[in-house]
Length: 225
Image 1 (cartoon, one colour):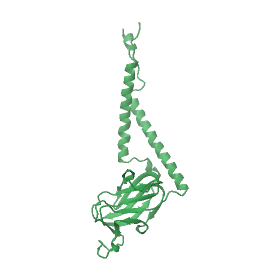
Image 2 (image 1 turned 30 degrees about the horizontal axis):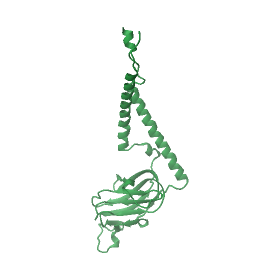
Image 3 (image 1 turned 45 degrees about the horizontal axis):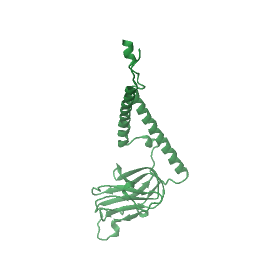
Image 4 (image 1 turned 90 degrees about the horizontal axis):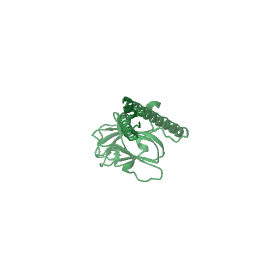
């Protein structure tokens, strides 16, 4: 009788714990692969001289609704530094007119008032208009330092909105294209990426275990005498 009951059961291909381990290993392999591929792409552009790495001074950038205090005799800057700028409405722009492979952009801007949203827009080849679909929000990486991670794109122009409020005095130090970073930086997940790496493999393993259990039940047939 015991033997007949055992014949009704089939051994699962993977146990839930094994599925969980496999899911995390697969996620780790994918993460490392994208890091190595990204490094190879970056190195290719760098060797071809198509990856700009430079600091661009305020005088070499085009601005709109964002002007130096020195441009208006009625404006009084917070101090004698010549790099104080003022946003004249709630939609100021800073333009970099160039092209190249961009992974990271850093804005040097010390705001005297809360700036609201600080964002970057980029153009891809053939485009002329900046849109919300190609927008990157800044991460504050130090006092007066806003970093935009583009993830590696060939761009034909950049627009930075230094604030979204208007009337904000800003000590503007220019922008830096592709600032130097340790080689291992691209292998370190950000906050959101950590959440994905922690929870998505677990959910995938649970879903796989459920599917396998359903197939296991469907595949069971009564044993014959």
